[in-house]
Length: 405
Image (cartoon, rainbow, N blue to C red; front, side):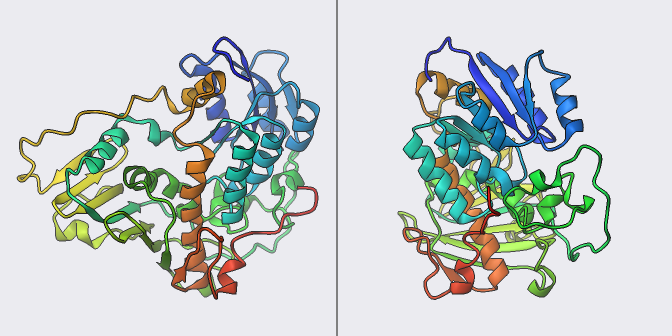
């Protein structure tokens, strides 16, 4: 569907947390010309609260499979704001029906899911976008221009960190807990293995559990590693290793802190990228007297360093860059992350975080989790989606789905 004056008919899968925020963001997006025709959530309470804020006539569903089948000719595009483990199941079905797709990060819960989502998006010819809003900011654009313009010379190392800690050392709860009224646990589980209901999995806590999320790495790395991916045109790492708490305590839950080392091929030679979360921060910050921001990206080049977060950027050593004139701005201002996707649907244009790009980024994130869970330094063959000689690691590349999903 194209045409600048067309009204895009949107359906939303997942209405809690980011879901309701996404409804607001899309309806308020510049030049939106979009309407909500259906919303889907496994909680009756969440559905009722959502439609109470929308115009009359919006259809409600508990099961996205039913919604997509029944409204296949009435939905132009879907927005997926479910927990990570349901992203691929919903997106693949929607795209195969010819629907454009916006999906929260990370794109998929496994490497295989990310790869399949990119392949199906390309084959279906639909417009896609992953929900990493910071990509649309002016600050990220200026950082990319500085790196590409050679402000700090050839980049050899990148350090990326986040002070958040989605993880823990708990085991599966054993007590039997009654389901909340109007909540469909089986639909919430979707393609994941069946487990008895427990509230410890709800209200974003699912990020801590391997069955549903990937800890802080899965939550935050797509936002932050996006910057070096974009600035340095990174594709896939060739080697990955990880350090964290003893793995025997993390079979069910993601670790409370993690340190992942990646090696990426790059035009100027191998590039080292290190991710830190929880209580971990790069030692190089203190060594060079750099500020200890809660989140950040540090590019280290042959001619200096560039420190950035979502809204700030500083060249170091500051004395060396006194009077420095930044390169001419050449990356166009974004319409807004949500507006960008709607505009692409209407005009046939492109987005900056389509599934081709976002799959590569999300795959790198999930590879870090695999390195930690195996405790090995892994060699990655991206073309063949394989870890040569490492069957234990390859078992983590894909997760069997429950029948019907």
